[in-house]
Image 1: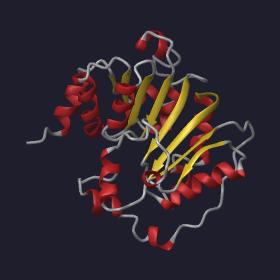
Image 2: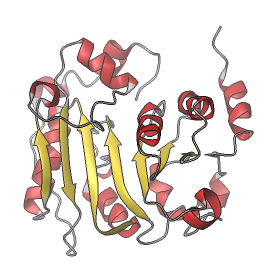
Image 3: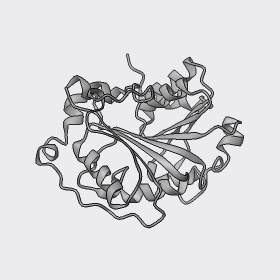
Image 4: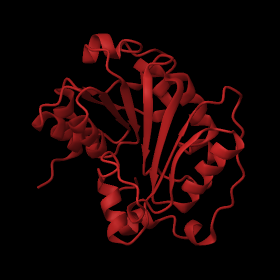
Length: 253
């Protein structure tokens, strides 16, 4: 029988690598580790990479397991899902991985300017009707630009044609440097050990024949970002509930 949420939250409270800060601790306040992750938490000067909307955390753990000289932090508000990755990190005895349970809107409370080297966005909700909630939209990219080192890298993996095209257009209109662009990653000739790590959601989408898109770019424009205009595909808009239908795990991603 699956553990209930309260049991999982209690277990994670006991994990030294899981941060479950209260809303009052971080709303308009700096978390105590802000600017001090390298010195006080990881106790090294290795690069810090974030996975925002990490879900079950398997991508964060997979990266940490492959790259021991880099620190990885998964961020998500759904603690019951994050419990999976938190336990995997313990089982693998990884000391270069952490998880933060918080809203991504509050991420600026956790990290200082230039404290982060790269950001991964793995299968976020496309938020087709809410531009300000898109994790690759101007609101969040502006936030990331503050946290990232100059010219920091953004990675997007998605099943959504809309989010993929929207992010490509974002890079185009803002003259951001594009590093990789694949509209069907696993039917391309691109070979990369990092991208071979599959998340729970990715496995489910692939099992339904949905192509996985990968797009990476640099946040190397110091000017205010321009919001692109991208049409929402009719078929994707009317299938926006596919995450529930295909994934069938009882919760939205």
